[in-house]
Amino acid sequence: MHPQGTLVERIDAALPQTQCTRCGYPDCRAYAQAVAEGEAAINRCPPGGAEGIQRLAHITGQPVIAPDTSRGLEAPRLLAVIDETWCIGCTLCIKACPVDCIIGAPKRMHTVLDADCTGCELCVPACPVDCIALLPVTGSQTGWAAWTSDQAEQARAQYLARQQRAARLQRDNDARLAAKAEAKLADLPGHTRHTDPSVIDKKRAVIEAALARSRAAKLAPKGAA
Image (cartoon, rainbow, N blue to C red; front, side, top):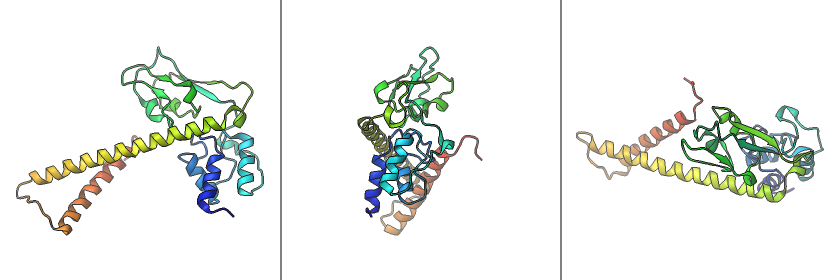
C-alpha cells in the first residue's frame, strides 16, 4: 500500500489537469485527494474519459466502472474562442480561467492563447455578453486521446503558478488592510501605542477578524443575505 501522499500524487498525475471542476471538486488535486481517501469514485472526470477511469482503477486497485454521466460526457477537446466584435473587456473570463490562457486588459478586447486552453468551459458562464464559443478541435479523438501528458503537465504548472500568485496578492492585500486598520486605531483620540504582547495580540485578533469578514463577503454568492 502506498503512503497516502504518494497515492494522491499518483492519482493527480493520472488526471488531465484541465481544472474544469466537473468532478465536483475545486481542482484536480482536490479530486485526487478525495479519491485517495475513498470519498469520491474514480469515474467523475469527463476529460479523462474511459482511459482515465482505467488509469485510476490501476492506481487504486479498484474495478473499472462506467463513467458518471451526471458529470458530463467524454468528448473531443474544446477550445475557447472569443468573438472580438462582442467582447466588452470586462475581464471576468480572465478571472475565471484556471490556467491563465486568456489575455487582455480592462475595457480592451481579450483573446485566448490556443496552446494553453484546456477546454475547461469555465469562461463561458462568466461572460456577461455570451461572446465565448467552445469549438471541438480534436476531431473524433476524445479523453486522453485528445490530450497529452505534456499538455497536462503544462496545465498543472500554469494552474499552480496562478494559485501561488493569487495567494501572494491576498497576503499583500491583507497586509495593506492590517496596516490601514492599525493606522486608524493610532489616530483615535486617547489611543496610545502598546508594547504589551497581550494588548498587541488582542488588536491583531480584531484586525484578523475584520480581514476574515472582508474575504467572506467577497466569496459570498451575489444576492446572498
